[in-house]
Amino acid sequence: MSIATAERVAHRPFLDLSQPILWAFAAFLCVLIVLPVSWLVVFGFSDRAGAFTLENFERLFTDPDFLEPLVTTLIVAVSSSAICCAVAAPMAWLVARTDVPLRLTIRALVTASFVTPPFLGAIAWELLAAPNSGLLNQAFRALTGAPQDVALFNIYSLPGLIFVIATYTFPYVFVLIANALERIPGELEDASAILGGRMWHTARRVMIPLALPALLAGALIAFLQAMTLFGSPAILALPSGFHTMTTKIWSLFQVPPKPELAAAASLPLLIVTVMLLRAQRALLGRRGYSVVGGKSGDPRRIRLGWLKWVALAVCLGVLSMPVFLPYFALFNAAFSPTATTLISPSTMTLHNIQFAFFELSTTKVALKNTFILGTLAATLGTILALVIGYITARTAVAGHRFLGFLATAPIAIPGIVLGVGLFLSYARPPFLLYGTIWILLLAYLTIELPAAYQQMQSAYRAVHPELEDASRILGATRLQALRHVTAPLLRTNVIATWCFIFVSVIRELSAAIMLFTSETKVISVLIFDLKESGDLGAIAVLGISMLLITFAVVIFANRIPGFGAGRLRNT
Image (cartoon, one colour):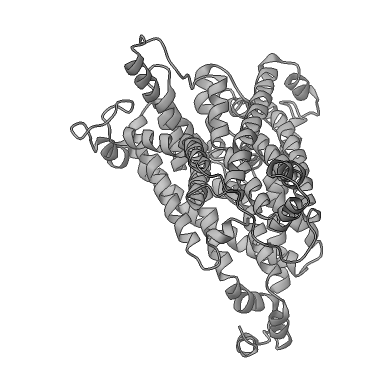
């Protein structure tokens, strides 16, 4: 973009609407974030008559019906976090600092773990490890001759739930630790070796202390993910007869609804989430003070010798839990007459595809709603992130720091909690949106805004404002400069942000399960409903379709110049 371009687009309009429009975006952001949280607080401290009370919280912390889900949630979160760290830390070290083969392939498979919705993974593990019909239990009985009532695995249990949640949470820990290890300069290892330090001494005195903040931050993120997940507990815990906090909140909206108790149960989850995110940010913020110096060398790869093949087998074995085995189970169920019977060339059928796309009346509605909401949320979310990022990066309006805080605040709002807040906000006049797709659109915008805003905010920092200044000197308004000068320079980031939001909308369940109606059902909710009716073949078909769409968008985003795998490794 040149000064000539700035001259071409610049002209002084009769009426400059830049400030009113920027203020309108700021006001919309405030309403989007503040309104649902405010209604959570109001309802949490109100009785059914609307009077102030603390009875909701007293019941929350004294009634066994609420204490048991709370204790269960803590057990699940702590256990999953510990398992994630125990598995992800060694695996990240192998990929980042050793010569284990297929390192890029392992990272690609970790990405596959990321894009697989946890609720779909839970369904796949049902197909694999249900006590009676699970494929793994069937194989165990066939190989050992064990009776029908003996099972090697029982996914409908607290350990089963912990295993599935950890399976789809460990990639967060892996990425944080692997990136931290790759940023440690190789010169530090050389210095330790020169001073006589052996490999394990160097690891203990140099590598581990530098990677420890990322490990602790990963543990907090894993704890947070396990605490706020809805899909996996709803699929595995409810059939087992126990609740977590997210499923308990959801159950409070069943007949008869208890919105006051749901709001009261949501607020502690929100407070704990905020505290954990602040702790995670403080830990990661320390990394910048760990290493001082100029451009560092590449990390030194530790040669494992023949053990590298053992390490590769271990890594692939770990990745079989979130990728190979679940994908095989879904594929088998999609083309088998019976979801838990192994297919063969003679039994393979297309009936499930026929049923899912042509006989099931709700599929077309769900697909249409999903694509409409995905496109609208991605487009509007990208525009909102673009404008709010501009306001905060260029200090365009007063209070820009507060707007930056609001734009990142939804990351601290679990999806189920946001669903409760939006229901309380928009199920009554003057904003009567419940029963329409617009309330789902607001949910998706709110959930995906933090990541989109951070992406655009970092992009603005890489673009010097000189061209905007030149355009404004020549008479352009702020919005004209943004549209014709800055936005084209951010084209790659804008497209990548759009793709990210679109993919996230397709796989979102927690908020949608609180807000959908029969006319506004989306594909994730349809899969959840089909699980309750036991149509596993149709679930597998729809789940594979969801994964194919997701992978197609992810591959497209990674082919954008400047946004490929090299960039993803540094995020």
